[in-house]
Image 1 (spheres, helix red, strand yellow):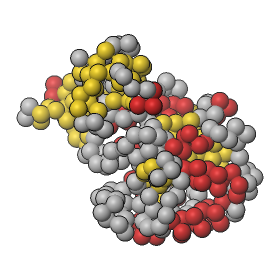
Image 2 (cartoon, rainbow, N blue to C red):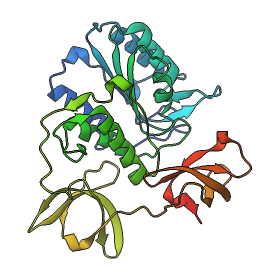
Image 3 (cartoon, one colour):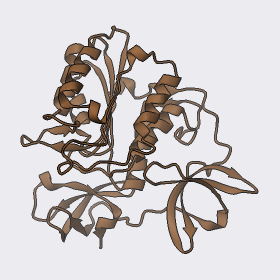
Image 4 (spheres, rainbow, N blue to C red):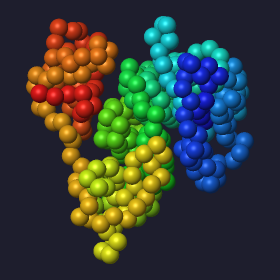
Length: 330
């Protein structure tokens, strides 16, 4: 695990708030579930220079046995370098590319199964690389598609942690077990609704039904897991229902930097979440291009949740992109 929330070059990479950091919570989950200390490496902030990360990663991988599985996690900043390769920003030092991360596992890890998880801009570069290794069980769960920016919130990492913990609202078919596909789809939906961005994931066919957690208790109320808007003096705040009570109402966890805010609210203060924009495939729309900083004509090619995938009129497919609801209109 590599968690970088500060950088030596503060002008190039802005720091993140370290309070309530979710990478530490994910680490604690594995520790609490019996993963031995010598099976864990966690480099954070100033410890995570590029030279140290590369050296430590290679030596760690070489300790593995054939039956071992690898869980790789990164949070911080992601970017494209001059060669257009997706890179993960360490505290200081040169590029650390998605390509070399997965290649290092292929060369040095004795096991066959590895999970590549990243919460940063352009993190889907790992998914692109993972699917090149057809003889390996390489899985990628990433916060955003390779060419897009990501928000600075912990929404992706929280969704991942909810799945690892076996929260019943992640078990979408309520059968008491959570598969890798269910987790990937849950993360994808969360990122679309909460952050307006398209997650990226790759799950090999033979691992689609891999069970992550068993014995998940059924939801006592179908409302649990629902996204809702909660009214505070005329202003709506987004959250999701974690529990219900006939007297207290709905227990809502609000989306914020770390998603720590929980509150019981009366049902009449809530309303169901609905996407603010919904255009059919083939529709001609106006899309705000952050690259050109203006509204441009585009056509909807496909949809997912609250997102639309568009092609700009007069431009090639290399400019196609997923757009959030606030950047699309009639």
